Amino acid sequence: MRILFYTHSLTSDWNHGNAHFLRGVMRELTTLGHEVLALEPANGWSRKNLKADQGSAAVDRFARDFPGLRSVAYGSGFLHEEVLQSADVVIVHEWTERSLVERIGRARQESGRFTLLFHDTHHRAVSAHRDIEALHLEEYDGVLAFGESLRQRYLGAGWGRSVFTWHEAADTALFKPISHEGDCRDLIWIGNWGDNERSAELREFLIEPAARLGLSGTVRGVRYPRRALDALAEAGLDYGGWIANADVPAAFACHRATMHIPRRPYVKALPGIPTIRVFEALACGIPLISAPWNDTENLFRPGEDFLFARNGAEMSAFLREILADRERSEALAASGLETIRARHTCRHRARELLSIVSILDRAGTESSMRKEAAE
Figure 1: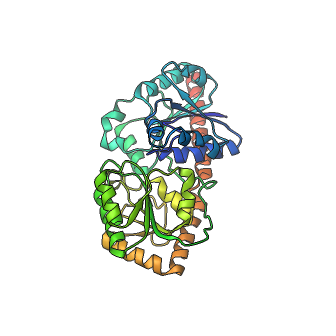
Figure 2: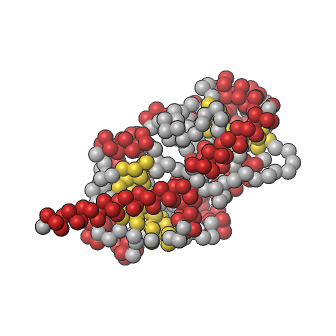
Figure 3: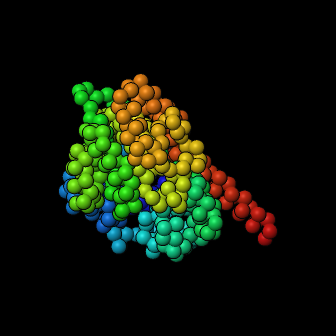
């Protein structure tokens, strides 16, 4: 099959975690024998910010890091209908401009030859629901929601014909344990500041425990305001700015522990949805301690795959335990890695996607047959 992904960006992962997942899924679909292409806006926000922050070399390295993947940048004059004519499956991400979401829907209505899916990996369905409500998804065959709570939101609002849960996962061709020779630092946190959606949580679960324990540590990510940078420095944590996702496994390898601090909208309004960093960290075999979130779908084995800290005091206690007890640390890392390899790789998600497409194709065929019989 020829599969098209309309994404905000495949070439840039600057404050854009969905690129991590799509790269892995596209790689796996290609391995399974499908022709895969990404389409992204030439002036996309993530791509522009990456170039402004890191220069053109950071954009150019995508081709070196992911040589088997293709992405075409489109502008205002791009002929989308011509590209769509040769597609079997089209997946449109939620960050796509509203007018283009609707244009692709019209193309689906006129041609009827490709399966069309809408892919949502954000919290706008609850935090800015009018933005999603305004989209015309009538011509979309289905919606891919990256968690059951988001799926239920779509179903309850009546958005989309069919809604499927399609979680993110680890690109295990890239994210895997790497041996490291030499000394390791204590702690690494990789994540963006997040528009104040977790500023209090970062202070409670990252900054204060690191300062309390006197840990050596590294923070990577973007959009940190000056007050946050000052707080990191006061806690003894080194801030390194943006990190290419292809470099993250090596960064995990030279640290002894990491943590997950979810954004508040997911904890409060969309329970059960971890960020992709959880999957990626566990795939690299690094012990993980998480701030509170509710694993409503039993994606993991809390207490075995990672530890849940209910507050900053527990985060400090767990960090102290993991850094002091090598056997405990190794058992935790091994368990998390086992769960990822068994359930949460991009190969799993690629096969799930193909299964969803097959279900929709059968439903479409049966509907057509019933219509012909009625006529």
